[in-house]
Length: 274
Image (cartoon, rainbow, N blue to C red; front, side, top):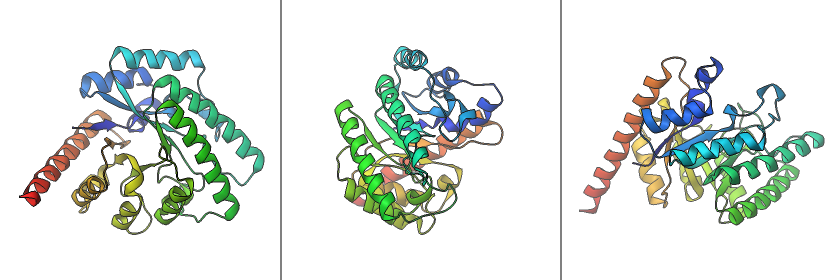
């Protein structure tokens, strides 16, 4: 089954000094026996430099790539914080843009197949973009999508912050960017309004997904998988849950639940086709 583990799932272990990015790769490969990873730059950035969060030097990035190759792991998604597009302050926008360019270079070095760079805005509140923000965001995603196409990956935001929490805004953004290398990392259950409608609106552009514990246990989880498949989704189903304790066990439990959902989805699809 095409399942991956978001690096943020082990953030608490990282904060406790019990895991680094290489430990994460070992964990995915040998504890969970998976063939793909879902990297998060939080494991190799300077978190004290928020909101920009400076990236590790190129030599360190190359060591990560060597570890990926050694373990024959695909980098199915690279989730980038501290390089979002929009900030109302022009100088901050410039710094974020420069950081995004550094991360795009790192994405190529790492061999990422999809890349998440957020729109910007509040992590708590759904927003509607001003015309200035919309035009700027479209321009930058068009630029980044062109770069992504040249280097063989897909790029776009996650429904993570600000305008990206509004599925209508994301549909409007995708139609304006209008590039085959642009899409969405859909974190299921994160819309501020109707979850099923939000998923339906963005499903045609979904390139990756994240499940958390609430999503998997929710009533609409199975129908969401059917919706994505009907829209042509062929990507991985990522689990991302930074449990407050027992991260290894909680992650294993979440993976088992997603496996069951995917198996149930296959069974119900087969029954419908008969």
